[in-house]
Image (cartoon, rainbow over all chains, first blue to last red; front, side, top):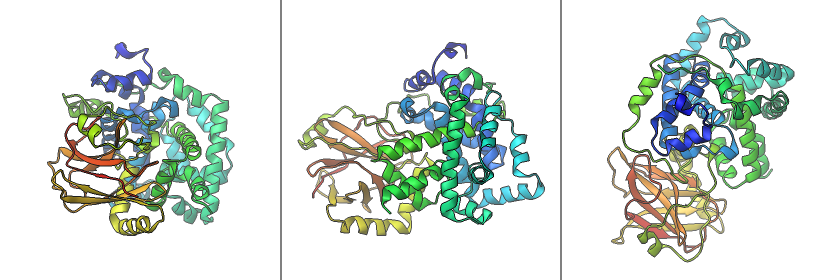
Length: 203
Length: 249
């Protein structure tokens, strides 16, 4: 999509308001793989992940005003939409059953499962390093909530820890993670350097 | 503990989609008018976004499938406030059609609207929560709250089709059992109207009955109106309202 190689995400979103399909194609090319990777990771179902990515991209097409560059990156918005939709699926009865069946068949621990899905080539090491700076008490609740789609109350029950404590640990964990990611430039990179994230390929 | 304090404790887990439906509703209603919490929430979303950069190549035909779903007509690209609370842009008023100018009260309206949008999971949950057992309680609580506003929506012929109650917190509830079902590719759209224009409050779907939403400041004398629009909504009202009403104290 050479036409849009030098364009910012904001310019691409602006293009959506003119019904320019090539802008959506470029957005998919830049962010499709992380979006699909997250959906696949949370749902544990590649078919469901395809539906999630399709739904989110079409939602952005219909309502591009959702993106406000002053409040965050397009990547962040898309992934939050993908995550929300994925969690909805996970929490449905059928998805839960599939997930538990998958978990029963795969005796891999969470950390192994995470490793199976490669982090983005550029930020993987930095994000992993940042996560490693968190205490186990902060990191584990975040992983269970974000990657397994658990509510904090479920996490509290799983970890046999008071709900208030889990809420506090997730909040402090995210703040510490943000500080670490800011220190190593990942969040800046996420916003400004799209070329580094281009994993998606158009057929 | 105040609502602000309670919501503050929930912002991080909300950003991870790790809260209950009730808690989602609480957060969404609060951050609609609390810039401090909205700012913290934006930061949590950004951090979660970095956390979520798990890369896996999608099937090669996925884009082709998405492309076939794109309509040949223009999307509702510049919708103003039928938005996702996660990245809701600041208020943006649409052009005022003549009928709105005529209907609007003199006072300026400042509305930060958050709609129920079926494409958005959290807002869908919010809607589901309201439509379930909680709606009646929420409605009654708003009605009992000192300083609430109420609006009766009527057709141009004067027939009553819906009632709206707005709590002092900005939480608002619409109940209707008289709005005809539209075709599946059409939706009712809710608007707040003043002399300076019409602000979309949200899409209500093709056959609304009980709907909850959040608004910012509303003053008695301002108008709430409902139009029929294409499924994806409109930037500005494209037709005369099927129902409208003036906010009463």
